[in-house]
Amino acid sequence: MHASHSSPISPTFAGLALAAALWCLLALPAAAYAETEQTAPAPQRELAIIAFHRPPYYTFTNDKAGGLLIDAVCRVLDAARIPYHVAEMPPKRILMYLEQDADAYACSPGWYRTREREEFARFSAPIYRNLPPVAVLRADMAHRASGGKELPALLAAELRLVLRGGFSYGGAIDEALARSRAPIYRSTADNGALLEMLASGRYDMTLMEQEEAAELLRLSPRLQRALVLVPLAQPGGQAGQAPQTRHLMCGRGVDEALMQRIDDAIASVLPDMPGDMPGGATAP
Image (cartoon, rainbow, N blue to C red; front, side, top):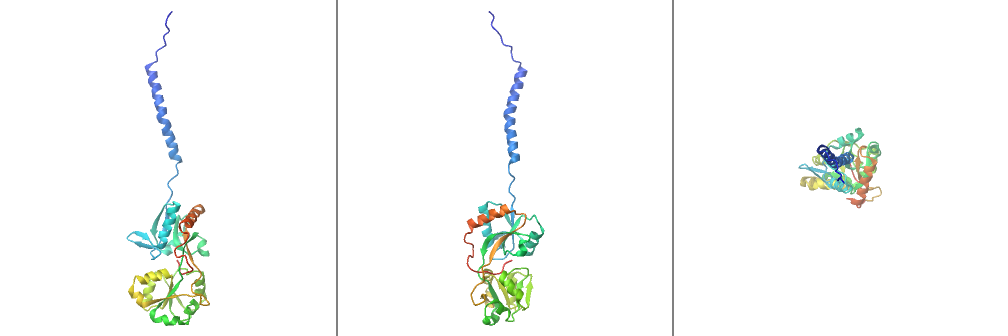
């Protein structure tokens, strides 16, 4: 008998087989990684939160943003896990941007929800309810308010009224102002400058949120001496106006699904809104 002998495997063929096996081991994970990389979701776009310096609601000091409403909105967006950044922008430019850019991926906190604004913007659930509004008068004109603290009575007192141009003061006050025949001066200056105008004797009265007026007077002992705050009353003598709520006003680039996430976070984070009590006042 003869022992059978297997044919020897060619060294060249063995090397090729080994190389092919190694290529399969290395290439398959790489291909799987490439496929995973292609299908991984892109980083979520940052939502721009735009506001202007208006203490105590919005503050921009030393490149740091804060204030009652900015802080509240940051809490909401953090809870909703929505990436964002905060930027400063004048109020008129905010309105122009959201109205003219149909793809604006931005929101601005603290605005009243009006029919005109709903034509170009989306609004969140309320994030704040104002304290009752006040009239700010020069101290030497305070006796003019003796005829009543209702707005129509103050408008009939022959006081020189100056208001911030382009701002809504809430439905009830806006209607009372529109019905009044008293001269009303509109200014592009901010509310701090309006109070300076009153203190200098240029005007006699303005209207303002209680929170903002109190903060501006707190910061200036001179204004405290020159001006007085007069809470407005509803017809019939009832103190306080109907509650006015502030919202996030967002561009049309913020879709309904994202607005719903924001509203859900508002309900979770702000169940009792800051300033949650009967009241109402001016707003941008």
